Image (cartoon, rainbow, N blue to C red):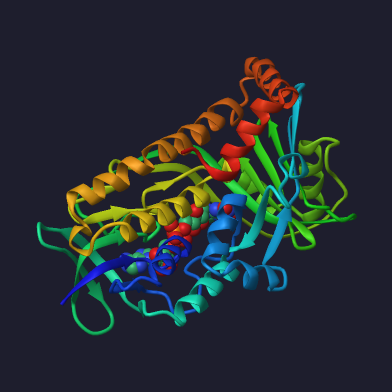
Length: 385
Ligand SMILES: Cc1cc2nc3c(=O)[nH]c(=O)nc-3n(C[C@H](O)[C@H](O)[C@H](O)COP(=O)(O)OP(=O)(O)OC[C@H]3O[C@@H](n4cnc5c(N)ncnc54)[C@H](O)[C@@H]3O)c2cc1C
């Protein structure tokens, strides 16, 4: 049999696509090696934009997620500054007429909410099943699988959302190693965080503090060598190093837990479509976390692809014309998200002192110009269309 859509990977992006297609009469099948309700990744703090909230509201998962104890923390203010340089920028939800600029959401809680929502739909969820390869031909895409009945699935359209793009044949990925790692940890405070997030650009790289439940989620960019030392440091020494780096803008750090690090790379699929195949989410592009854009971009991939699929006649699914519409529709937002994130890394993610002045001017100008600030904030919140 030939399914209408086969989705490879039910992470937050693949599961969102499946849910967005669930009310149609399409025959949708999803494979993922993980078990239902379990997350493939260690828990991490996803930074969701306001636009991402709107997507989850439309899919009916936001209210339950927001009501789950500790799953969602609103960001009401973002304070951007640079160490040893002038210029600062404050983005405020009130100024944008929004309840929050974004949200810090637990990856696990989001995955659980999406899995639970998918349970009561017609979508065929095949947990415990991994795709080995995805390849398209003129008539259908073929997904070879391990686990569960059968050895392959056929579909008019296969969507790769496996987080790594490792299952697709014929699409290469470019990889740029930033030679830095992100050190992440939970930082407790002597006072409530009041929904304020801090992004501070320091000579060693950017440091972000995101409000989460009763603590801050820290994302600290470091060289691998320094990160290794910071990971092993006694807690008091670590907190002192963080406070010194952070200056006077935040402070009162009282404890650190769950320290770990991961390498920072930019991985971009050279194409997001192939014969009868579309690639979305981290499988299409994995970005540096400096601007919190990666997951939001992946989510927009899923939402926009769902709209293209829903607007296409069944016979047109996976055709070159349908995939071309999808690719063209996503091109600007995708290119802008990658370029914006990479540009920020180049401008702020290094210790070239001569950049301090242009950085300061940029931040000060942006803060002083309401229209430019609004455009900047809107791009961060909703993406570029
Ligand atoms: C190490 C690391 C740390 C990160 N930390 C943060 C962070 O702190 N904050 C933040 O906002 N973002 C972070 N990100 C980015 C964020 O995790 C991604 O943007 C988000 O997970 C993308 O969702 P996704 O569904 O595309 O992929 P994933 O979340 O990777 O999900 C992929 C899914 O595909 C499934 N899968 C894998 N292989 C197969 C296969 N062969 N067949 C079928 N299914 C398969 C997996 O089981 C999984 O369920 C991090 C990324 C990495 C790599």
